[in-house]
Image (tube, rainbow, N blue to C red; front, side, top):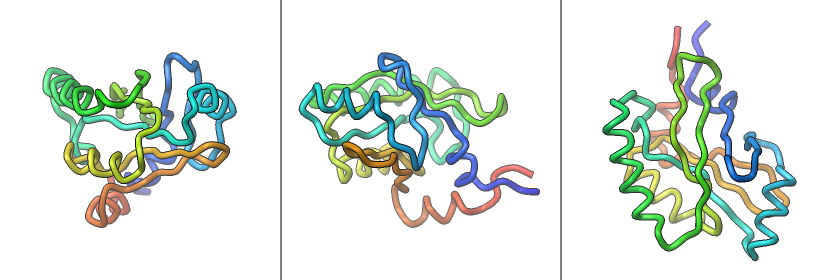
Length: 146
């Protein structure tokens, strides 16, 4: 049975190192809620510049892309993290948990770095998987693995 990228994203673990927690799509995270409250924030985004459209690039290129994303995020505080695929065929991707980043700005960055989707969350609400655009959504519904 084929697995879509959408299903893979739902099974992926999104780790925020400094909070020692994993973000899960569709679930609230009390550690994140407390962290946001302590920092007078009500929203966050979790994103990366690695592997555009979920197509693997060399680590050097991925790191270069993520450094550019970090530069673009200079106005917002962020914590480092990793996106862990559901199995060893999906290697970890260095990622950013960005405090206070508005949804529209996070989507714009996802599009700039050719990402399919990001995570977005607000205080006391489940974490959302947000697609960068309609083409990315359609791409993610198609089969990714046999």
